[in-house]
Length: 354
Image 1: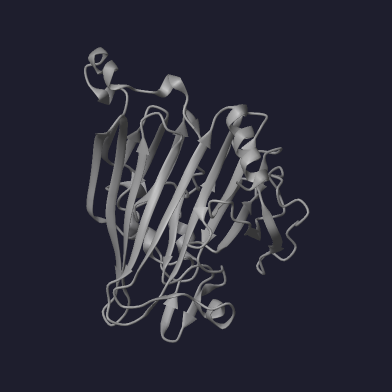
Image 2: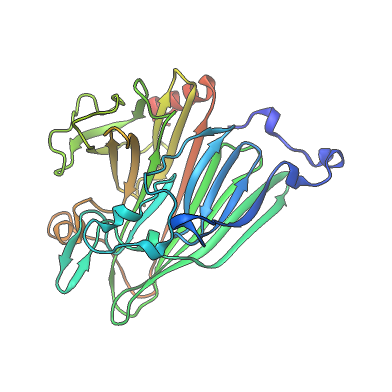
């Protein structure tokens, strides 16, 4: 979805000193508090502006579309991986939120102990710094493309040796961010593989009256929040004094192109967000409604696993594995809507399941 006012043509290059006045990628290093020393990239495409956090698993921090903030930032804020507490729920003490926090690669969901191995909430990958980090700005035909890439390795002596290669790409004037991931088992024995995107949306998109739009075959409450309000699953309630969160599992019907589409729309403000993901790559989808006052976040969570931690998931639905040198590929789009026309178009697409 593009608007003519965002289009840049090569013929217009004679009217600017440098394309960087319109778009570009700036390497930055955060300076203060717990974020001090974190290497990141400030990406501008003329419509979107967002942070890629190279030292935090190549995750995506705040995103603005036409100046409107879309991502939720936790009370922790940006923080260096040195503050990560791996045991139990210590992950929450270093969870910045942002548009995308990656969970995995061998553990996702509830903390547990698997034999001698203690597995914390949502795994380690988002607290690991990337290597081989690079960024590129280039013309691809008539499209000006901006990309950041890096490799995040999760390894242990006598343990797993898995690698996440991530490329994050956008185009000048686009309202989309493309995330392409390749997860590879670089070791010599099979490795458990649990992988989830923790996508976090906040105010002003998240507010009373906003609605979740999805084509669902079924809806059920996660065992950790069994009293979740199923009939109102698609509604965003006001902030609550008494309820911390509700988590629901949505069985998303794939569209004709094989992808799942989920949208959060705030029609009163004329803004929305949609997720386009491959339902084969991510067969599970959870909806996190963090509705407590002072939190107030809606989370989209596509995954290849459940939320109950490796031990319980293995005993239940089972846990995927990667064989030595085996790779798994993921391609996901994040879209930002700023007009009623864009919201209506995406809602029609989801309703028609096309």
